[in-house]
Image (cartoon, rainbow, N blue to C red):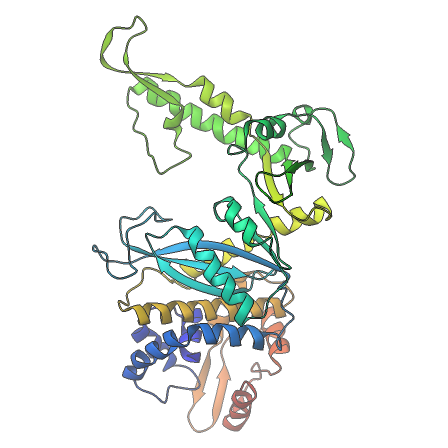
Amino acid sequence: MSDLIYARILEPDSKRSSYKTASQFLESPTYEMHDVYRALSVLAEESDFIQSEVYKNSGFVTKRNDKVLYYDCTNYYFEIEQEDGDKKYGKSKEHRPNPIIQMGLFTDGDGIPLAFSLFPGSMNEQKSLKPLEKKVIQDFGCQKFIYCSDAGLGSETIREYNHMGERSFIVTQSIRKLAKEEREWALDSKSFRRLSDGAIVDDIKKVPFDDASIYYKEYPYTPNQIHQNLIVTYSPKYAAYQKQLREKQVERACAMIKDGVCKRQRKNPNDPARFVLQSSVTKNGEVAKKKVFQLDVEKIEDEAKYDGLYAVCTDLLDDEVQDILKVSEGRWQIEACFRMLKTDFQARPIYVRTEDSIKAHFLVCFLSILIYKLILKKLGGEYSSDELLETLKSFNFVDIEDQGFIPIYKRTSLTDALHEACGFRTDRQFITKLAMKNILKSTK
């Protein structure tokens, strides 16, 4: 398992290639290739136990910020054409026409993975939360935490579930999906306060776009049984960005109208064709020989109403708005985990086929990013993820037969920080076999 994790971080590839990569480590494998494949079923069977034990043992490495738990889902595609087992056709995040499998992931408040689950590609992702959260509560011993997610995983049912016991929730709220009264209140440009000092602003629409401040207002919100606080924020800079982006899309829409060609991409919410009205009749009501295109001014004006606005709902009625928004803003960390899994650690496409192999594959990916994030945290957040990955890949040595090793990587402040964090050094000019053996022993 250790070799699979190291290989996933340094040279992500198939299990066979990972075995070849491990053969170049200072501690070469004492097992055969067939042992790797046979081990996958064991890893799959013990996946839940391994996750809970890793969480408990990680507390000896660093203090886990488990008072806030972020949850989100993504999916991974297979290079196959037919559904098989949990590999189902569903809404692919990458818009691929292949069967997919979905992953639900919990991270702690520092963005370090906590637990994951897999579920069929055709399943509604909202149904994935409760089973995994129950596992976190029962097996991990996490009883008191704030559940934080985006609007897609923040339904009223999920909010009610996380309103029980000592749990609370902070979830994003779509302003468009609010009831008429709440939506009109949210879109009203009056009664906003500046977040930094609480100063009341007469009209946020009059605030210049270069203002870096955040403005907010609150509303007691009780759609069902739970008393919630609806917080709407406004960012002038974000409003300017959205306006600029839409203006470019309108320009492209006008070009489509001029060319008389307008093909709508249903899967793309930023498609400029959404601003084009299509009609098969002329202005006089007669049947047109070909489709008539015109700019949808009402659509443009409607989207402009929401520029710069963002909303969250929470049952933390007594907490400071600034603290609530800070927790909500941390959701980017789980997106960063997914992005790293798919790009740097190449978790997809998936080449293994059996259910056990798939589960073991994602367990290795999960543990790889968990360990990688723990290293980043021990470095104090002074280095970027890309810097660390590049440096770890550069740690190479020349093996002087029967004598020792010569490091051939460049010493930097990051390599010094890594040695300091790990409690040993490998940047001497020459390392004897005995010294390296003691270093390897210390890592156990």
